[in-house]
Amino acid sequence: MALVGSLLKKGIRFGNLVANRKKKSVSLQQKKTLAKLLARARYTEFGETYNFDDILSKIIFEKEDAYYELYKATVPIFDYNTIFNNWWQKSVDGKKDICWPGRIKYYALSSGTSEAASKYIPVTKAMSKAIQKTSIRQILSLGHYKDLPDDLYEKGFLMLGGSTNLNNNEDKHYEGDLSGITAKQIPYWFRPYYKPGQKIAAEKDWGLKLEEITLQAKDWDIGFIVGVPAWIQLLMEKIIAHYQVRTIHDIWPNLRVFAHGGVSFEPYRKGFEKLLAKPLIYINTYLASEGFIAYQTRPDAQGMELVCDNGIFFEFIPFNELNFDSDGTLLPNPQTYKIDQVQDHIEYALLLSTCSGAWRYLIGDTVKFVDKSRGEINITGRTKHYLSLCGEHLSVDNMNKAIDLVSDTMGITVKEFTVCGVSHDNLFAHHWYIGVEDDETIDAEVLKSKLDSKLAELNDDYAVERKHALKDLIVTIVPNRAFYGWMQAKGKMGGQNKFPRVFKNFLVDDWTGYLKNEGFIS
Image (cartoon, rainbow, N blue to C red; front, side, top):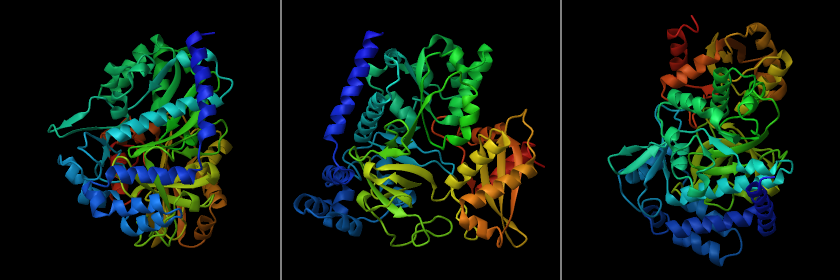
């Protein structure tokens, strides 16, 4: 038994016991978190404009929830464009004390697959510390997994993310992928365990980065991998092919844990597990450019636990026709709730107020609570990434589940797909583009029939509209490399980037134009 690993494992278990004893209700955690945020930012330009002192006084001196009513009445809801144009642009230009004290040194560039350009999300020192703190908590949560060997904690952590070689914007700030920013700031004590190491992590060329990792893979003893499923799977396939072995465990026999995030893992699971010789522990993670929002805290949990006491205050908008239009745009005066006011199994759009100077910020994700008392949620999709051309209200969650069920029935593996809403005989249709490996042959008509049936089972609105305005479901089979080629053409390979499950507006033409130009469709 490895002495260091044994001591670390005992420390992890003891840390969990202490943390569990001290844990307050999620409602109290959130109230205290908002108080800290307001106190830190009350002398900023934003804090003075929106009277943070008054809201803070309500929290301190009144026992009831009057503070939240005042917060809602005082501070407007912001989407990215409004908060950037009115506030964050000043920080990007180098001004200090705008939405958070001091000058912002780092900006995370979001994946930008929903809109034409990347978004600039501020990453303050306070947020970097919060992300590190939550990351350590996630490691500590491994104490709940009783069957992990002691020496696992001495193995390497492979974190596949963006380049740590950040862009220097006129000496005003640094910008890049959040995973690159956080990897650049990894604590000194963790560096011996961190792979691929600082030199490879700095590589900006994604293809070259994967090559360098592949060449060094045989020299590493990896126990944990962290990353977006698509890129991790591509890397493992590359390593297996290079060394001409059957599974990744022939190279990394001690690999036991995969912490994944960014997209639903289910479409990737079957293909992923073909690359393994033994099962892994999967830990779901919700790390966005705006902060470390939630993670799975125990085995067999049905959802991820929101991080309610570490720099983020959450609000929830019911994702329905009262609050959003058919394009997923927020309507005026929406209903909003704090965490103790929500209900299980209702879909909500997420608002964040953070220690990076985001205030009542509509992040664009939708979630459902699976255990309100624990603050456990699942991501169901995006406010813009769903289809409701005629009232079918088809969510990304519906799409993922349908693809998973059909894949099981047909014995196939589908890693990538996207859906476009199109006109059809003066009414509407859904056009699915489904990715397969080059050596797979799939009957598109059979897949179409089974997919249509499963969607109708999962979504009553879809079933109704298929009899009326939603006249058809169209399936086009394309190679998986078409999806990755489009990402490469957009400069979105690797890191936290992921392929959008729904294309709307100008991106439909962009996608179909790419497929035609590359010869994937006629």
